[in-house]
Amino acid sequence: MAQHTEPPRDVSKVPVKERDESLELQPFLDELQNSQELRVNNVEARQAAEAVFCTLARRLSDGEDVKLMRALPGGIGELLGACTIHRGPSHARRMDRVEFMGDVADHLHIPADQAFRITTVVFTAIRDRIPEDEVAAVASQLPADLADLFRRPV
Image (cartoon, rainbow, N blue to C red; front, side, top):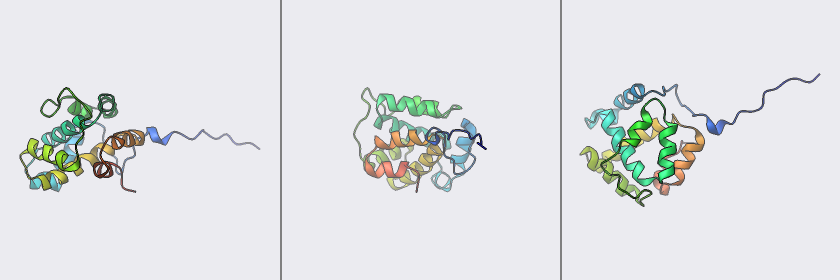
């Protein structure tokens, strides 16, 4: 007797969540604000997200930054689109991890070593809310050391 089975769903299009994160802006900001790294540095969640998004937007190509913005629903992606500080007329600007962290640190007025910790928190919150194929697409445009930080741990 034949059984009806559903076709396998394309898991690369579904966000992989380590926890049950909300796709709305305020819970995203709350998650960031509850992190030890932001509290220790006295950084507000929106400022941290804007600093990392702004620097990330400067690193990604025009099409990829738009794809990432659209993959982040509920107002989260709008933080990426609102960047005016670091973003210039040219996208996909080559920068290594040191320059990336320096830009985040300058944006937040904190030491560069603390910028790494804050970037890690924001990257984790982002990647837990986007599909695996978008994680891979963003990581592919980053230098190896930043790409490893953006990808999910295996």
